[in-house]
Image (cartoon, rainbow, N blue to C red):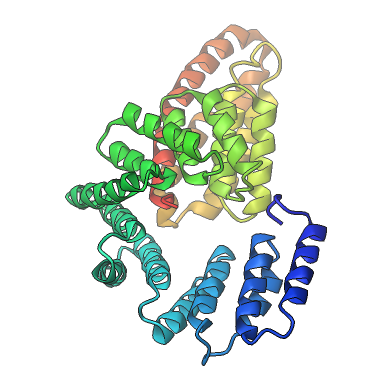
Length: 392
């Protein structure tokens, strides 16, 4: 359910639809409308059943296959989604929405792998739609996103092509009196890529004002705010993303923990990291972030007993390294964790000596300053990785 209709209303609506369509000469049209109704209600399995009942010799087969692909993609079944899209295009090559969806499937494959064949396949799909209709704004946006992804892969000249394609989409939208959150969000990403951080943030916030339910600009705004150390504002966006918008992402949960750590809301930070562990039990980044959180707690609690936080930091860094060492994705984080372990090990004895409390306070203050510098570097790394993963 998407929250807009109750289950009872959905069932009543479909029952009415089926009753009023009894005796119809086009049963496939009924099945398609039923599929749309269940899809709008969030009843994906029922929707799949209705679409799957439409056979290959029917005029609506291609549209049904496209919608099955959308459902599969939302469930993370990418190969199944591509199969349905290829079926749709084979049945009706002129079905532009299927070509565009397949273009985005290949674009995501390129973003993950960086392979040229995925890039070229995606580009061909979007360009084939523009050959049929040069004013298809969705195809222009698809090309803009593809070119942005290539710029993010290190070929910055493609940012120029991305801006050109985005400009065409914006021109077409303006002619229809439309302002698209997707287009404005992408313009913000291009600004961020060019180093215009403040302008990018304004763009993301503009996109949110147009569509408060849009997930990508809200997350992108949060990462910019993390970078500028406005932790509370970042947390507000991330709370909406992981709450009312239902984003079940380890990265978003970790970012929320970072924001709450930065604003010294330690208990809420631990809660966010606990949620991240539920979403990704084997993700080593959780232990890294929990370790950093416990380091943050060392200096503020020096008048009390920081020993528990110190030992917890060591424990979680060791857990992180046990999973992360040898994985190239975590090479830089592993080096930082190892450096932190070297600084922290042996502190049990020092902290426990009552005659050295003043020295301990001085050393803990130094450690805290080091951790602040580490946190700044970590936030930049988190932002970079997140922006590579987000262009929804």
